[in-house]
Length: 257
Image 1: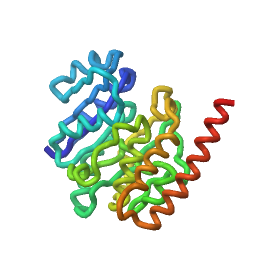
Image 2: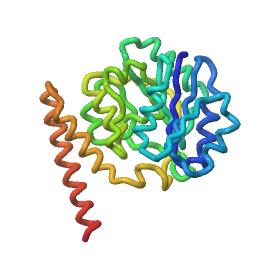
Image 3: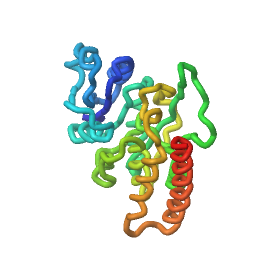
Image 4: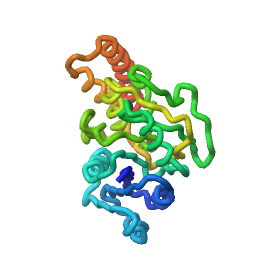
């Protein structure tokens, strides 16, 4: 099996069909599609029933968070490569074929990402300069904000042997945490081609339900405990941590006052 595609989902009956169909219409590499339903209470299982022969559907009894759902999918995956798709995002045609070809040609890379189209509240928007995708050893710029998106990434399955799985203690920013751990030691590749549509501005997204800086602070504190941490990286982490703590405390004071 060339690629395992993992879609974690929770109460996304409104969007899951578009996500699933965008994967199933991919051509070229052999792939498996794994849906991990993180305890949905809506019509997700009914909507996916007609696709039972085209995908692997894993349903958790309780909602435990996206990290646990992705980790379950990773542990079930048999592909040489692994891709993720958020259940409210969409793969563009040729996503899997073009990213596999890129990785096959760049054997030194452990993971890479492609470009994505941003849609907010039904309208296409242009990302700001600071959000533009980058390649290489981008650990320091990634401290300020997440420069890698799960739906635009492909990784070799040994990525998780080297980096570890998603941190299940983090209810949000679990991808920020994973990418920073990877970027400490590994460059990310960039395929300069649009591979994904990323939808935003929706009320059920994690970014709308959690204080992201709280979980970024937890991730940064964890990084500081790493042995043999590059001294420049340590200083950069400490600077970012101080800034995010100040922002978080200011936000807390505003909400309480």
